[in-house]
Amino acid sequence: MLASWLLLSAPLPFSLLSGVTGLVALIALIPMIIQAVRDRRWSLAVVGALFGIPATLMIVLGAVLSGLFYGPLSELEECRSTALTDQAHVQCDAEVQGSMAEWISGLTGG
Picture 1 (cartoon, one colour):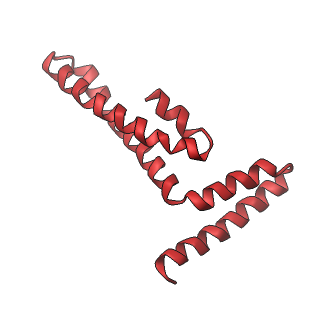
Picture 2: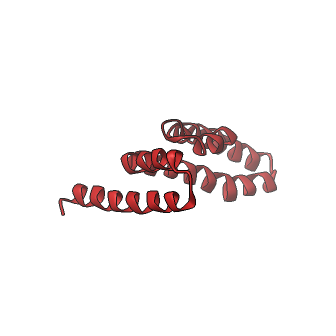
């Protein structure tokens, strides 16, 4: 789970790997919760179910969304890496919002 979180904050091509490590964490978490219930370790089972499962699902969802919006997000990262001022960062955000709107309308055919 820690590897997934660290990869999620990495630059874009590597952040997509957070989905894979998130799925591995989820697959490892399910048997742990089942074993905790069998051993009557209720606190571990509840914490794993209430916090672990949603956290891993959010990481996987974040990676999937990053994959879906890869083009606009990579443009944003590239623009922000070259921007030196706050005004340039704001301009990057505005350009990417327009680019994302065009990209989505291209997907829907509108």
